[in-house]
Image (tube, rainbow, N blue to C red):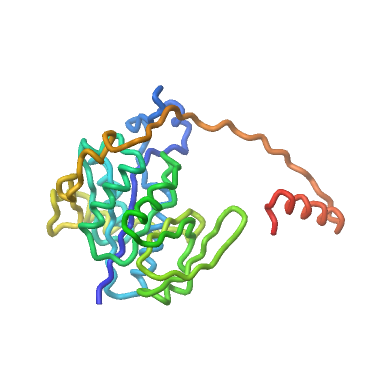
Amino acid sequence: MSFHLIVLVKQVPDTSGPGFTAALNQDGTINRKILPAVINREDLYALEGALEIKDRFPGVSVTLLSMGPPSALAALKEGLCRGADRGILVTGQALAGSDTLATSYVLYCALKRLEPFDLVFCGLKSSDGDTAQVGPELAERLGINHLASVSEIEDGAAGFPRRLTLRRTQDTREERIEAALPLLLSFNDRGREVRPVKARRALGLRKAEGLPGGGEGPLWIWEPRDIGADEALCGAAGSPTRVISSRPAAGVSRKALMIGETDEALAAMAGELRRDRLLG
């Protein structure tokens, strides 16, 4: 029996470096040509979750799905080099300016063409948008359950393909949840370390190009018409929201306290942490 896992990946500008401020346009958008492009960090953890299932169960295939400009093929190649089987890029000028609603619509159309599938994986949020909206919007369109802030698939995915036990790690709590498939899982970056790129596969894919419409190769390119998407619901035309402004957040000064090693001092510190809800 075969099983199909789909991982959503997004190529984003690397906003972690000092060049981020210079890359901000006056209208709040990011000049992506200035910054190097990388795979969204939380998407890598989502990919790792899918690949762990593939490692354990025979007959599992992993498809990467991305929406973006032609340069996003590089992100798909990297995902293939980490262990995925196929990468599909949905691209086209009609998709430019998409907000989360338009993005989830395009991805929904692509996923319908890729049916059947058993699980959809994605990052909780993207570093260039930070909304955490696409995952739940997409699950709602698909009519399947959604779990956010997943950090790990537990028990070696023992219940697959019917059920999974998942660990969710949030700021002040950790949960273990058992859920039935099909599911859409949004991963944070608090799980196991992601595997590296396989050098031999990277060499084999160095000259690989995307095949329009699909084919025998591992990289496909789809346009809106290939997935039956209504262009009036894509891009800026289908986006009811827009960014008004964007700027780096101001740094927060934090005070460091030295405490004694007495029981009283430790008890006082624990009390402060409980009041701040940092300790259960």
